[in-house]
Length: 224
Length: 369
Ligand SMILES: Nc1ncnc2c1ncn2[C@@H]1O[C@H](COP(=O)(O)OP(=O)(O)O)[C@@H](O)[C@H]1O
Ligand SMILES: [Mg+2]
Image 1 (cartoon, rainbow over the protein chains, first blue to last red):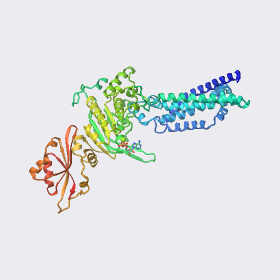
Image 2: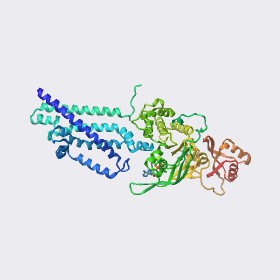
Image 3: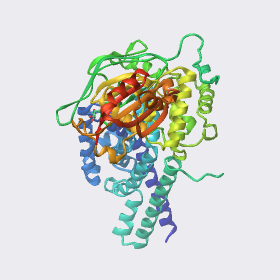
Image 4: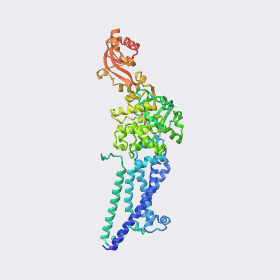
């Protein structure tokens, strides 16, 4: 494999990491509060407002039911508005983020809803405000699940990021298509696949490690 | 505020804590609570409750599952609002309080739960700090206060452990320390020992009793176990179908139960039940003209428990008494005896009058031939 190809591979890997990292970060930034709100705005919950909850739920479901490759193309005008251009790696972050937000929101919602209602009741009995309950009870208690959810979201984003070649986004997926497939270079394809597998493994392992670190629910054997 | 947590342990006396007792009164006035069911109907959980909880005392409310105990308790700190009537806690109408006022009231009302409801993500110390953080306590003062509370419940060695590493009894101690953190005037307990084994139950009850004695705060506990009421409550109420059917000092209710529900709870706790071979033959009414025995329950209140009354009965009236079952227990540090006896039905009337005259209580259970 030529030095040029190796250079391309390194560059593509960095581009993939860049897209996944930024869209993951933005996705979490918007998805976390949205997920928390989806959980606590249900009927009978902390900030019960069933109508808003229903509407938000519909929007989230609608976004999630659009296949990613269609989403990328469908929101090109929006992408141009936000990123200033509709093509390129940076532009690809827009559809990636828009796919990540509802995905992360649902995962966070589920994590929050798993928190034992007795804990909310205990916090209420202490005179906690809804915001205090979110900050001091719901999020810390849901953190292991949230961590695993974010891990899952990052892994999905790595997969999605391979499709953004369609709008001129670069990265590993794009490299694999252009060289491995269109130019019949199976060795490039193989390397791309291996790098993607390693990336996913790394993200998954790191996520699970962090989740285990923050999870105090099961007793751990102690040093002494 | 934190000085009252380190107790001076002077034996059995309730300490006069510099003037006013800390315990607040709780008054239920015509309280009712009904819920809407998802099916569109309504369920009445609590009805017509008028009850005054003695400030500084330990009051137990006993009832079967679904009787409305939790609902009654949860109205005291506003977790549920009454549908009718009102609940006054330390003079505040809890049901009418707005969100802000309710949060202030709740800082004066600690609560412990059957399943502890501890945060798995926080250590023992972290859990106990939670109500202080919520109350906006000065961050710098929290660790000292938490250490004090941890010591109070005897968990100093476990301060940095997580709930998952604790036994049930230890978890409930954390729950108790947490409930006491903001120096409340009332402690509510929702079946706090129901998830614990009998031995651990005793230690947790003892802790509650010490806390009540040392801090003088009002304790309102609900339970389905008469033994819990007997062991620590000075006052009690019996709830059945959402209504309070009997209430008063525990000793009085135990020695003079009026309502059938109370009696059935009592027969469970006294352990004094008829042997099966007699229970099976028991009839409600005597059969005329046959030789039969009347079965009666004799309860010995106060000092009479130690008197050999049955021996005196046979000496003075010449009536022989068969003892079927019996036990002497302690309720609120007073002896209370409970005997099941049978005697000649023809002379039973005279015997009962004799016993009543000497301050004992009798109850006819039935007749056997
Ligand atoms: N949130 C609720 N919604 C509907 N019904 C309820 C609710 N809470 C309690 N109930 C009903 O009220 C009755 C009393 O319940 P509860 O106070 O929990 O009884 P206990 O604590 O004595 O077992 C039960 O019939 C129960 O089903
Ligand atoms: Mg209950």
